[in-house]
Image (cartoon, rainbow, N blue to C red; front, side, top):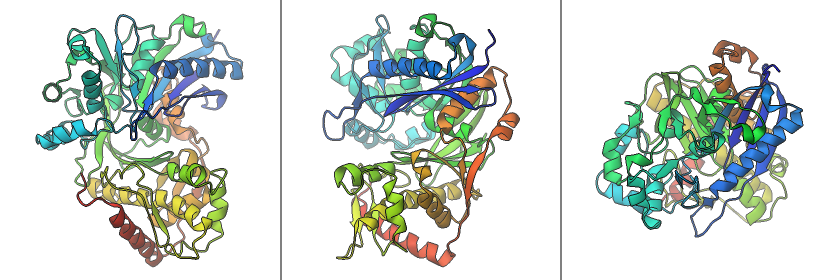
Length: 497
């Protein structure tokens, strides 16, 4: 039976998606399985690693059923994942020693403060390209080692394994035979030297993290192993892995230096391809690895915005102003402008370019005439304003002007937001026909390694569903943005970390 399909497994924070593509990259099968987060204390976010793996199996089987395809017809599997989420498990049994500490979790913030208090900030940034923060994996590892009795000693004896979610899923896909990650995920641990492309032993020593815990780091396209036959009934070569935002960058065909994409989800993740140069940021952006294609590395600048879609969720679940996220577009369009009302959704601090974990959400400019329409519009506009701030920082750091913004994620279905984003940036916003760029990127990375197509062919296949052209005057744009900056100043803590 010929292998005529590609499988993409996308393990995200709220659920696991599996898509099956034909070789023209059309979706022929899909399945989704929700996963739970738990919140043991304020600011803490956990997940059960076993549930992440179980949901992956359900999604893969469901996608095959939906397509009417056998696993033996799948040429390659690509894996993409929520990044930074941290799991430690027993190498002998494969059982986790603690719940997964999710990327959003702030429980290890005090550990990071201790590290920065020792003067390690510049050292961390120089090696890893990251701003020291509990967002990344290193402090989460240290926290688990501190909390689980005997864990550090067992780690030093080589009895335990660490992995981000890609590594954990790969371990299970291969029946525990492969303990490996790849470059774009390793770059998010705050332990990986992105220039030397190796684990940084000096930082491991500073953080007291045993190197015996760590996986091998392979290129983004590599022969990672073969899916255990027992999982789906046939072995499938695993040939591509990437963190979700890097996979989306690849899926959007952002192959050239200066290409930029923004993913609008719970938060926003803006990523610019900087080619073979690891651009050091002076504006508190992250320098990271975009991908490693068989040894050819491309770097990226990234700005992480903590709250975008979550502001809309707050309107729905916290205030009860809307029943569905889609209602915000109609509400926003009832107004001719924002009437000076701004929402800074710093519900869990502010990310790039501020990196102020102590910032708090503010609603500015309300009067007795303020209505639900204003709040809906302000929540949508906040995603666009925050994106503009990161684009400004990227332009300064990279020396490259952004000629257009490629977009994906759940919020891009909102035409009001996409038009407002184009108006604020003054450049076209390009919405692809295939909105699930993350899964598409995972599939295409695997397909490249399987020699099923090349990057030129991917560019030919890539289709834009709609282009939003800017239609706002420069004067109006500057006035709106000035109001936003004033609102942000009110949200910042007195001394941003």
